[in-house]
Every structure is written in C-alpha cells, then in structure tokens.
Length: 239
Image 1 (cartoon, rainbow, N blue to C red):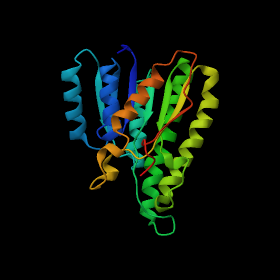
Image 2 (cartoon, one colour):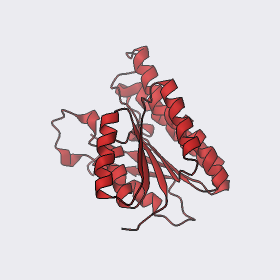
Image 3 (cartoon, rainbow, N blue to C red):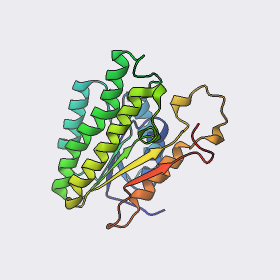
Image 4 (cartoon, one colour):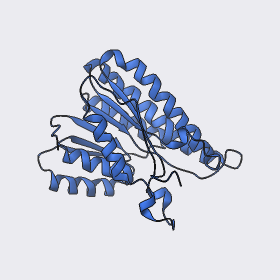
C-alpha cells in the first residue's frame, strides 16, 4: 500500500462504522489522524488500538457532541488554530431518523440539521480557509444515496443530504483555483448502526470497509485528478 506519510487527516464520527474503518485505513496508509466523535472513551480506545498498530504516526482525538453548537464551535477553533495544516477533512458524522417531514418532531428536525448539515458546512468553511491559504488539501463529504434518491420515510435526513450535495458543489468551485480538491462519496445501503437489528443478510449491504477503500482511492489520485463524486451501492440494489 502506498505510504502517504507527513499528511494529516481529520475524521468526524470516527469511532463507528464508516468513520472507524476509514480511520483504520488511513492510519495503515501512513496518515497522521485526528479523530472526532461524541464518546471520549471510545475515542481513547480507538487511539490506543491505532497507536499500538501504527506507532510511527501521530494520533489525536477530540470529544465533541456535534449537535451542540458551543461544543462544535470550540472544536472548530481547536482544529483550525492548533492544526492549521490539516491535509484531509473527512466529514463523516451523521445521524439518521426514520421519520417523515410531516410526522417529525422539532427535535428530530434540529438534531439532523445540526449534525448532518451545519457540522460539515461550518467545519469545511473553517478548514477550507486554511486549505485555501496553504493551496492544498482535500475535503471529502460522506453523503448518502438519499441525496439522489429521496427517502420520504426519512424526510429531513434526505433534505440534509441534498444540502451536503449542494455544499460539495459550491466548495469545489470555490476551492478549485487554490488547488484544493472536494469529493462527495455517496453510499447506498451500508451496514452501519442504522441497520442494527435487521434480519437482512449482511452480505447484501455495502460494508463500511468499502467506503474506507473509496476514500483511499480518491486520495491516491494524481495531483491533477479529482473524483467529483463516487456512488457505492449494493450489488443487487438498495435495500
């Protein structure tokens, strides 16, 4: 595997599912990693595991509830001021509520908007400013097939993913002149905690490791190539 040393990647939602497997893959590839998620104990455990397997890299973590505006603001300040040379931002954190727009509560709406849209928007803006100054970097937004195929039973979730799609397009246009890449990875039905308790065979899902491999594929492209978007669906279609 190509060693991509001396580069630093920040991953949100890093302790579970796609975020965790991506952190593991990037550590294996030689990236220094900054892990961000809500659960401090899970972050410490993941740092310990990664450091034991990859003692040559730097691993930092920051516990943040991304639905909390004050916590998110503090995290963004820490990330941009203490680590102004982040090379890769992976906006992965997300929350899924299976409820329609007409039947959702205000709490459902606010929570998904804060985590699924405000977080990648504000984090991309802050770190994107540093990338623009450094004239290098790569922002990867982990979106959802719901951004292309609306799911009415998950109304606000779908809306937030459409918003992330728009954010990705705008960021790409804004940052392209500065040599910064922007990619949207669009998973179909992926075996994460959203499917906990399902009786559907696991082999029918996209695996979190597939998304981690997609991230690495995008990062391995030559300096002059950018993957605008990548859709990864189950072989037999979405579930």
